[in-house]
Image (cartoon, rainbow, N blue to C red; front, side, top):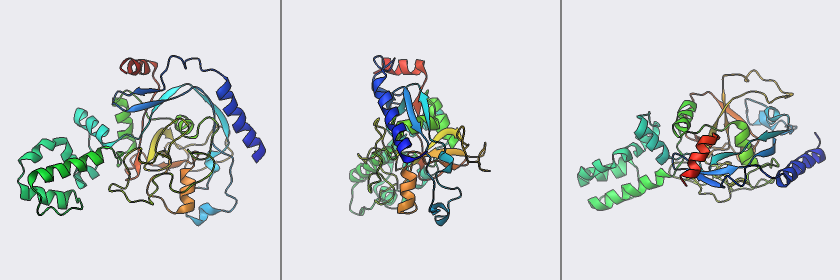
Length: 334
């Protein structure tokens, strides 16, 4: 598809979405609270542009050592129609996943032991620890950059509480696909499909990046800035949000979706990687591999994939609410 035709398709789809009234728009609020307390944003019913027809004419994928050609698994650009759904405004956080672990005795992420966050589940036990031992914990276990030698017990406990509060709002990571699915199931929700994720990220017209069609530096957390956890507390980048108000979709952590990595319908691309071997992950994370590569990963149409058992420090998730019963329940509880 040539560029004028692609632009016309995007404009037409956007216009249709504005003109055609939504049958249930009057009955569905713009924001609800999920069963896990997360703020969820309405993604209205209607058409959107999915995928792309781009081609890597300069063969940059080979230069960067990519295991797949760029763009080809996004083919063809096509129109998809979806019913309305709600999506988490932010990625699922440590605090939310901690509550899931508490209630279900689920295995916590491995790094919670390394960075001391696991202790937050039994915070009250710190009150009985002697000052000298707390000084060691703050400096050597939590690795907080502060001189603890002259701090009293209350100061140490306050420092620990501030540390936990910061980590509370960082997206959970080092969770595999099954853990992400199980959390969403516990919350009465599901992982998003690729279609849901891409519509929520790109808007009805299928724009290239969450903020528009032009790449801009510094719009999201892709590793240029240093954060204690690598990932930033959710919502730290006011510029990284989609047309619908979904945050951190072009940086922070990449996100699991429901789908196996496979070709789109009517695709002109085949791959031995397709099938039920890899799960798709969407969105850029903070552990990027260079400026041009970051542009590629920040595109809303870009598809990554890993084995379902993968646990990575820049891979998390968010949930969607599609069940009419669940939506009604959450509206009633607002």
